[in-house]
Every structure is written in structure tokens, then in C-alpha cells.
Image (tube, rainbow, N blue to C red; front, side, top):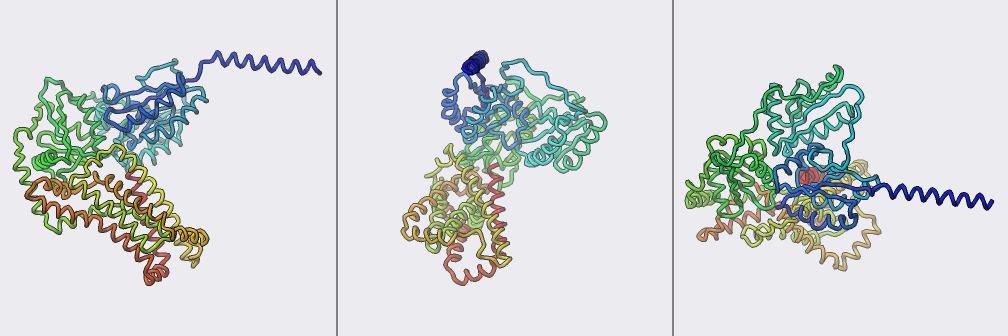
Length: 626
């Protein structure tokens, strides 16, 4: 018996020793990731300075992060585009910082810190992971030959534009289900034409070969067929895949037409001067700057002049160039905007394809900086003043009211009012909270207009804060919509006592006791005021009308300051009017007995309308985040 036990112990020791020796012989697993970033991106610096150092220190040689700056070279930008294409990244994930690790893509200074540590641990346990399988990255091991796919295969091109909503819809609702259905028999080569001259030229040649006019995005090429636009792709692509699979498959289409490279040039050719207008806090402006940087490498003769449209000189120049190029008055002094020669691209028109076409138009002739020769600043200021004088009181009031119909501010105010009524607060407490939020909105817009608070629009963390607020509010709206639909159903059945959007009696009594102490309310009101300030700053870049920029511009002219300040005051008062109506209605809804009886009688209808409102608000907020 003792011999058996000794033999068993010896066997276990020997087995463990062999296992330890084998483990010692195996190299430690290594996780490799690649981070794309830009010099002028504060979120990128946050990741580089705060997120990566602790992880690199913790894992030592088992973690390698390849840092690729898009500001350093054109090759880095092309590598970024190639990596995005390889991962099939949808258009709405086109910003930096962007980190690739294994099969995952992390975007932004919130996503990367949240998910990267866990993914590193997961891949270390799985034996490590290499860089993306895209030409241009360091290789640690010989490439593994791909295994043959069963049956015939169909390959197709999918051309998209990251600013194209239809492209995202087709990707999610058409291509992804088809790839799940056919597996390895369907190969999709994704090409993003936004900022890529190579992809743009390939698209043009395939369109010419297939007999397609340059029309809607996205565009699909499969076999000898070309499909343009969401409707055409939805209707015809599934049948074409079946058709080509039945006849033995189809390789990736080749452009038989000789590629016509995008007209480029060198610094010896005539200079092309481009005036680009941006404003702080404008997300679209950040994307345009990446495209302009790419075009600068494609066209060395391109000279880009940048102007802040919120500064007086920039606003005056933008207005003058807009008039010179025939831009409608309502779209002048709006960012982003680009002007070359006699042509202009403003707002939604300003994307890579149009920019490339615009610059290519002036390759042979060049384009002078006409504003340096022809601009009469005095005449331009006079024209803006005349526009200001033509507004009239009703015009300013109407503009403020239209801009005040702001879903984000509505949704946030609804959040606070819903919280108050849900917890049993009413009357003056609802009134004070609504007043605090609205006062925060009013004072912020007034302060920025006067110039005291302009620095707020340049704060680097505003984008992250806006996403948190939008996301949290959208989630709340969805929850309230579901609860309202449930309550509508219960009210229709005559079971108002079973409605969900109310608190249990015991809990409501405890809250009422706490409310009487007033401590929590004293903290809640300053919080609603600060939230109003933050929401206002976030929305500053979204004012698309010409009225507010014109009023702010005229504030800098001494002889008209009094009238301009009056207009700014009236504009802001009308801007907050919808918010005032919302919290006043909420106040009367919690204090008026007659209104309370009416609400009780029409409970089912009111709940249904409320659910629809919450769904609309949530949809708008989610679309804004995306």
C-alpha cells in the first residue's frame, strides 16, 4: 500500500515537473494592438498619457501597442483606411483615437479605457494575438495559408461613405444578414471613398464599366452588375448572389477601363488656395480637417487657409465669400464651409468626394486667394449691418423660438420633471427646478453671445460629456416610453392602480418625509442649473441659422451694441420659451385639481401620446450620438 502511494506521488511530481518544463520552454504569450491617433486630438492624448502607461507597466513584454499618428505621414493615413476596410468598420466609427486588438475595434477616450484591460487579459489567456492581418504591419510569424472554402464563392465590392446614413443602413440590414446566411461563400470587399483617392478612382472606373452614372451611395459591384442606392441594393442583391452561386460563383470585379488617376500635381504647379471655415465644438469640422489633410498630400500645390467663423474677421470673410459664390443668405457664416475660386461647399455638401472634385477642377488653372485682393472688409461689415437692420423684431423672435425647439434640452428637462413627479414632488419644487434649468440655458447663451463665456465652447471634454448626457437621457426616455405604453394598456382596461410609472405607497411616504426636510432639494436645484449650462454649451455648435451669428457679429460694433444686445436678449428669451411652457405645464399639472381630473379622465390617451414623445426624443438622441 505504501509503495502504491509513493509511486502515485512520484508520478504526480514527475508529471508536474514535465508540465513545468514544457511551460518554461513555451514563450510567454504576447498581445499586440495598434492605436491610431492625431496630434490635435485631446481624446487621443488622454488615452496615450493616462490609459496605456499603466497597462504597459503591468504586462511588460507581453503587451505591445503600435502607435500610429495620422499627422505624421500619408502612409499612416492610408494604413488607417486599409485597416478600417479590413475590419468592415461602419461609417459612424470613423474618428480617432481608434484601437485595433484581435477581432475588436475600440473607439474614443471612453471605449478604450473601459474595454481594453479586459480584452488584454482575454487574449493573454488564449495564447496572445498579433497585429491586424493587413499589409504594412510588423509580422512575427509566417502567414498561414487560408483553407479552401467549400463550394462556389461570390465576391463583391461595397463602396460607402462614412457620412452616408443609407450606407450604414445597407451595411447593417442587408450585407450583414447576407454574410450570416452564406458564410464563406460570400466575400465582401468594403471600400470607404471618404478621404481615399484610390478607392474613389476605383469607384469611378467600375461605375463607367457598369454603365452607372455617379449617383446615390452606397454602390455595390457584383459580377457584371452595378447597384446604386439603398433601394436598388435591397431589391436586387439577394437575387444576384443566388444567380452567380448557381452558375459557379463570381470573382471580384476588375476595372477593365484604364484607371484615370485623380488629377494630382506638385508644388511647381499653380497654387490652389482654399478657405476653410470651422467653429469650436463642431464634430463635422473635425472630420473635414482629416479630409483636408489627406487632400493636402494628394495636391502639394493646395494651400489651406483656416478661419474661425465665430471670430469677427472669420465671420466677415465667410459672409463675403458666400455672397461671392452665390451661397444662399441663410447658409452664410455657417461652419463647416470651404471656398475655392468661385465655388463653395457648405455644411452637408462638404465631404471628401465633393472636396476632391472641387480641388481637381482647379489643377490646371490654380485658384488665387481672391479675398486677399478683392475683399473690402468695410463693405462686408456694412452688408452684415444692413442684414442686421433688416431683421426686424418679429424675425429675431421667430428665429429664437425655432432654435429653442431643441430636443436635447426638452429631453433633459423632461428627465428632471419626470424624476420630481415620480418621487412625489410637486408644485413649487417642480417650478423651482424648471426655473433653475431654464436659467442655466438662458445665462449660458447670453454669456457666450456677449463674449464672456466663449471659452466654454473650446473645452476638450465637452464631446465626451455630451455623449454621456445624450446616452443617459435616451435610455431614460426608452424606459419611460415602455412604462407609458404599459400604463396606457392598464388604463384602457380600467386598472389605473396597476400602472408602473408611480411609486409604491410605503416608498412614497418615506420620500415625502425626506422632501419635508428639504436637504435633498437644496442640492437638486443647483444640479439642474449646471445641467442647463452644460446642455447649452453642447448645443452651441448646432445653431444653423444666420440670425444669431449676425447678432453676435454686430455686438462688436460700438454704435449698434445697444440694439444688438436687445436683439440677443429677445432671441434668448424666445429660445427658452418652449422650456418655460414645459415646466409651467408640469407645475399646473401637479397643482390644479381641474387639470388633474381631466388628466385622470383622459389617462389612456395621454399615456399613449407621452410614449410617442419619449420614443421620438430617444430616437433623436441616439441618432445624435451615432
